[in-house]
Image 1 (cartoon, helix red, strand yellow):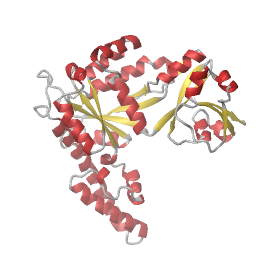
Image 2 (cartoon, rainbow, N blue to C red):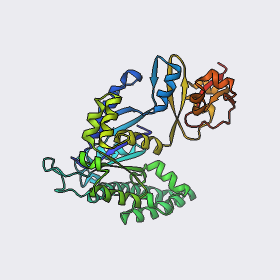
Image 3 (cartoon, rainbow, N blue to C red):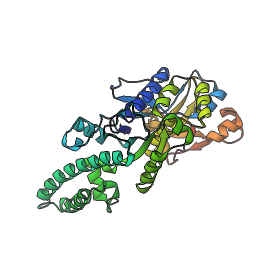
Image 4 (tube, helix red, strand yellow):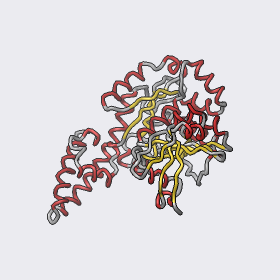
Length: 367
């Protein structure tokens, strides 16, 4: 799964509805993407970017191709998942493979939708899942400590790592997440995290699932509780109505925007989630713009030009000479590549150039 987002939550909180909306978004754009075979619980979703539409107005390409992001619908979680209850083992193995967690939380009352815990209490629901993640980490760290203890008799590095792992274990046993571990910037801790893929150290986005009235109001008392908790753990909260998100996917852009405007909402919940997840994953986009296609290419932030070129083809990096670069704002303001070049806004950049989000690029290379 790699650089993906795992959607987690208790039963009947809107997790599957949200994933279904994302899957529909994927299918709605399928003609623009060279999709591989997709697992039943995975959606490769286009990242909304209005800049592509503006570029297309100038270039008039045959097609537009967006950057994409992976979303994975993690098996439902219940109390005891860390000990194998429900689909706990499947849940935990899947979530270790993603980089960001979208934690869906029920923030609406509906007597027709039974809550597995008997009533609406978002903080209790959050605690259930986050406690299970910590318990799962405890099991992993205990095993690692046993191994390191044996190795430490003959290996100084293992001895140092055992010391960090033991301190982490005590921290977790107090039901504190790995994210709040005081030595989380220690290189040995970072190594441990890479090896164990600690669940409680992953970035989290809370998805507060509300009813339509609360969406129009900008939230409710349940959302306030989620936001208060999120501020303490330095996480983001996105308020959405999962049912409305499913309906929006079936509308064209103008209809969807009109619907949102009537609700007093500027951007759909899914778009907010996708953009926030893209940022949390440390990703950005650069563009190529030609008659065949206007396309967004995904790269990690702070990527240099040759490595950005490799996203298109490995040969571009191997034979890299220069990158022709036009800032997005200049391309739009001047009406395209030719006029940008005339105005001196097309730059030639070398191997040390750090690509900026939104750069329009063309690569010169030797085959």
